[in-house]
Length: 216
Image 1 (tube, rainbow, N blue to C red):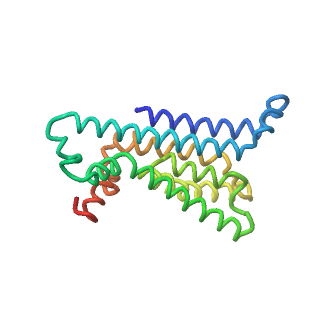
Image 2 (image 1 turned 90 degrees about the horizontal axis):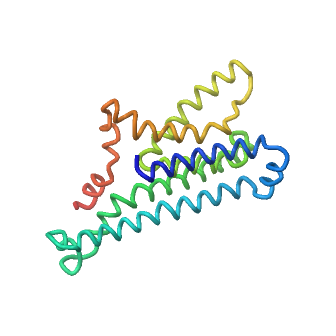
Image 3 (image 1 turned 135 degrees about the vertical axis):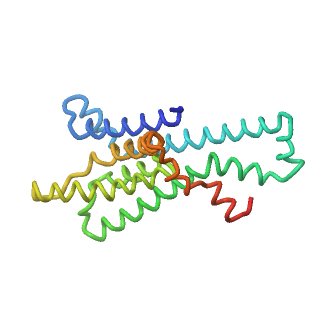
């Protein structure tokens, strides 16, 4: 488990903990939390996550450039021996690409969920739930967010159906999104490799897509 995994697990656990504190705290803690609304808290989590994740990739890109330029045949992959495009495609595919795609997917999911929620009279999601889902999409990364979205679809339908039968009402999913994001990452990083099924995600390789479309 690398630093990025630790950071993501910590952020998801922090958000879930904050959900409980904001909902069930009383006394002085409740007074303190009321000064910082939950949606403001989520906004800062978004900002810090983006800065930290993309900041470290900028640093890794710098280290990669310095490593290639330090000598040996790799220096011929950099200017002035060839254009900068090869280096940018390399770090783009390996560092930046998966997380840019995850960010774009989170925006698309957020916009679609807000549209559907408004279209059907706010019946699907409570306040901040859409931001929680979008943050889960981003933090599960690429291709992890495909696992996350499928878990939402499959388990959400199953749990909702069971709840509807037993309780006769809408299943509250407010605390559903963050644990599901953690589970999606565990499936991607631990369960699939343990079962020898890494090949299930091999088709999502950005390197292969890049070669297919650009021939590089």
